[in-house]
Image (cartoon, rainbow, N blue to C red; front, side):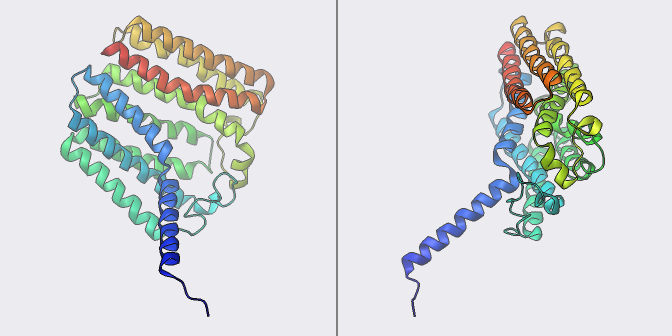
Length: 300
């Protein structure tokens, strides 16, 4: 009868720990969470205009990361049965029972509470309330609505753009016209961003019953609505310059980025092809950090 050596036990234990780490990375969607926190962080720096409180910035980053991670965890708990139906999500830890619903719920709840409390204690109540509103609206309104109607993308755009207001209020403890304009940029950007992804993943989404595309399909009417929102990015991206909040350089960069997005959206309208949807998706990935950094550099 073979026995397990101490070295083998160590390897097994290390493998188990490694799998658990990977499971939590999947649960909280580490890269996506970091991108969302980036949006809040760069907006804080924009609001600060060089007068940065690094302690507050650190609290915002940690608290924001925990709240977004909690939102993603709760999303996967709610959608666990549907995740199994999609190729993209079939290997998620809760869907495959590698992580129990109880474990995921406890972890997500603790992360959410900790993030909200941290921001309330060390930043201000407004920032904490906005973070809580983002978590609740994403996990408990947007998530179940995805199987009901394409209006879910509109609803989800609110928590998706709230990181901008969270970053702004973390510094100023108030919502100004400038903050609302920056919120508007991220709000409008989400439509071509998510619709291009939904176009590419339409078959996968349909298997789970998710209604993500406007007009319920990959056709001209859907592509036209996509094009309309990319066109909106051009004037709204220039608004901070128009209102005198930032300089001309960032306004020009935002307009050029908006025109590039519009070009790819127009190509998608002409072809209704997945290749053009992918081009629009990649353009959208570049648009937001490029424009937000341009606003920041124009404010320093």
